[in-house]
Image 1 (cartoon, rainbow, N blue to C red):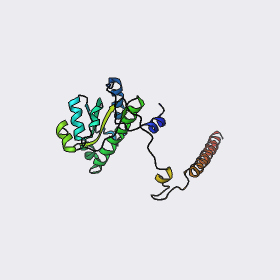
Image 2: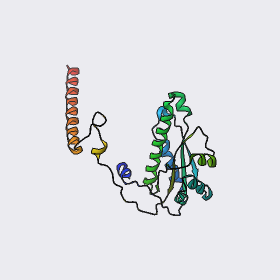
Image 3: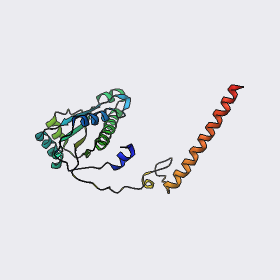
Image 4: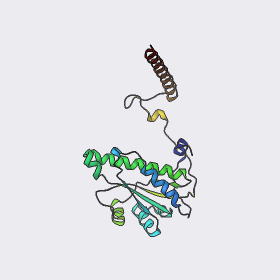
Length: 210
């Protein structure tokens, strides 16, 4: 699947078929997380794989009794240990730890979708219950819970804000009134810069030959 197609067609799914996730596909999901960008290449993310039914039930209960979660044959609890980032970046390290693990989670969601599977980023959970049931230290951040499996529902495309509503030029709040017109101007501007660059290269090469 093409990257942009994968991003645009991914959906949050909450109904799953009773079919296990193959080991190869799980490996691909974890490798996608492993290759996410991170501050200082510290790779502070950690992932708890939950596959047996009683444990998945505990996850569902900890996630504010969202029992649909336990119907997924695989649940991944994504965590991040901020100890190393804090050592290198002081208090900013905590923020980096959350950002890095979040990037890893998005990579996982795309790898899930690319392989014909589905998931949903669950952020509503009782932290203390998850920590107690899965031995997660207090010092470690719990980033997300990902139920993963083969989809048993087709989720419609949710409404999206227009690009004009989410894009600013040069400073926050400086809205783009017409994104199409801006992109046309931007494309022309880039072409002029490229043309000028080529001309400078030609002049430089010519001088070298003199």
